[in-house]
Length: 370
Image (cartoon, rainbow, N blue to C red; front, side):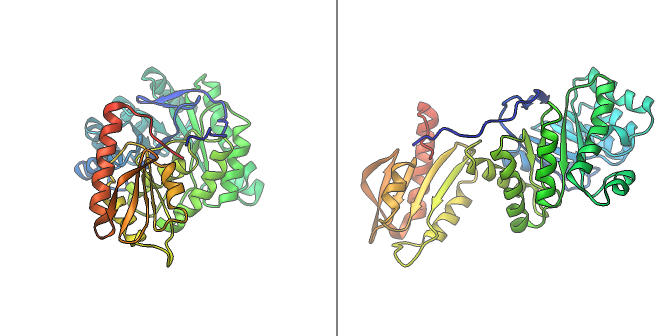
């Protein structure tokens, strides 16, 4: 059963990070960032490839030195997705990675020196059609703003962002996106809400330094969920003290839960209780691991008993309703004559799900999603 998504996206200017469109109604892009030493080209390329394989549209790489900029040249040559270079203070690094084909510069114009240096970077970006990301962080506000506001506030973050925006405006450069990240959910959310009213450029969402895998995922889901539900946000990065691949998974899970963008299998599963006729939790965990390579968006319902099982199965692409010894099985919302043996559910379900994916891809059948 298809539902119309009630979210109305904030209108924004379209920019391109490589071949990935950002803003103006384009699909919300999911990003992550490498945590390897950038000068270790082999390790960084390996991580970029893993992040891309998890579904990331864009990967950011920190480029803190000229040695890292030289390494970036070879990383870029081997990257399957567009790369953003994260640069602070040294304008020469920005010029070098621009020469080497970077797809976006994450750089705050006001932090890279005098007008001549800023103009050199902006001219290089303009000449090569490279967008810029202005990235403001609640933990690194300018000293005068810290003194003016006493502490990070939404007004302080937005004033910082607008200083950099004004520089690009003065240089007649409009192809940029902006982030106003904070580790506090309400500070970040209110800052983005305030900024969304002041500029037409796309917004890059994130709760910075969100924490470990579980707590950071929860904090990011709440903060980004509030903004995305209001139509704010054009690209996002989940900041976790974890493998960057996990950031990508959480990002897609957030978008999937809001019916904004789907990738891979969405498992609908009961928490299980004494009514369950098979081990729901282990079945779902095993299938999630086995089917991580599937990119086709599909709802799979796995319910342990007949209370909610048939109802959920009717609106999923593949559905299982638990029953004694053998469970009811549904494909495309239709009950199948075949029943699946509860002793061997994981292998059977994996086989049926993969077969359905192939069929859907071959026939381009509309996928059933709740």
